[in-house]
Image 1 (cartoon, rainbow, N blue to C red):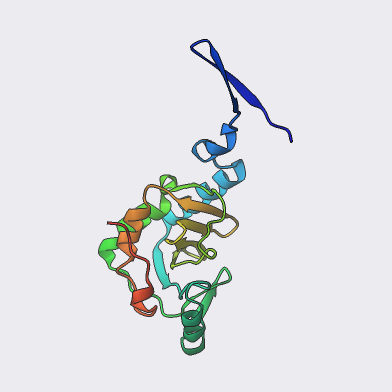
Image 2: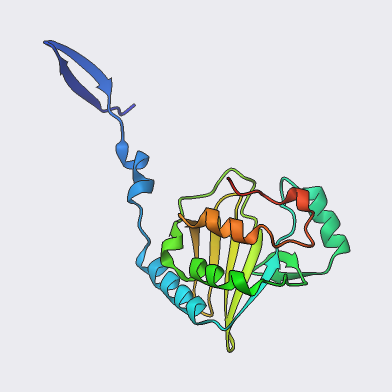
Length: 191
């Protein structure tokens, strides 16, 4: 076994303790986006900022924790696939008063932070898909409030990130938009 030890002097005595590898403890704090992820994020957020329309799709029940409900919904409801995830086919009407906040939260790079790894929540499951369009270009944000992750897709880029400081605000705006997914199964924003 390869162990490192630090020696500490305490009032004339010596304390030997195993070394702590702090590189993994503080990795999350010092993480930054790779050049590829930075470029993809910039491309997608710039596209969202210039988009002329938004289509909001509601996600189906979770594939692990709500497997029975998901199976029932897939069998009885019309769905569409967005990046290999099912959503209810009927888009949700968005209140025009919410569009500025949704655009700001979707197009600001500060709304996101680097992906820190897989969570123990049963897998990524998008609660919503925000599809921003400008002419023939589409920019999709698949948002999971359970694991606080977001997959961003543009015409030629994609990136997996985590929701940053704007997560609570985004969830508070979106949580009122549901009409097909069983309401009791929607995640709730922290108050």
